[in-house]
Length: 183
Image 1: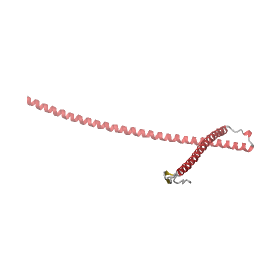
Image 2: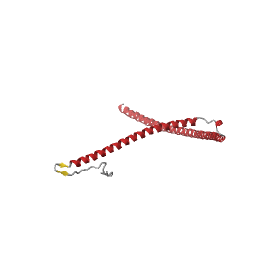
Image 3: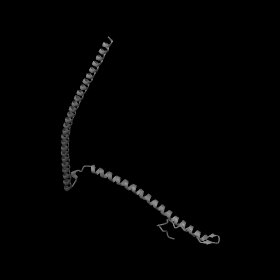
Image 4: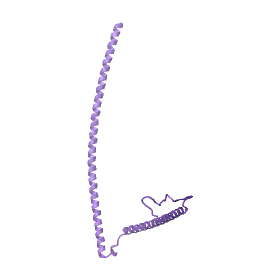
């Protein structure tokens, strides 16, 4: 019996030949025996796959540990300075050139850093001057606004005083009229 992998995992037989008292026992026994054999094969295949996966996981762990050790060794070697006396002349020259290039790169970086710091300080001075001018402008605007408010308040007080004086004169005039009417 073959398995159609597109439709079924295990070929399931759904019919048996009918005999006088139910299904044919030999046919059912054969089917069950075939099914058990295929299940044993699938189980063995699964167990083998699990064992291979475990072995691969163990190998992966050991390779990762080996890789970490190699990286540590490489890091340690890279940090160890090279003694030019122990190198052939060509390699000693290459090391000397690399050292010279390293010094040039550091010098260029330091000059560039100094230029950037100078530009930043100049920009900070410009911004400080702009901020001082803006503060002075705001102070002048505030002083003018307060003068205008003070003048407005003084006008309002003068107007209230005039209204109060007019009211007082009116009350005095009414009082004189009443007192004259009483006398």
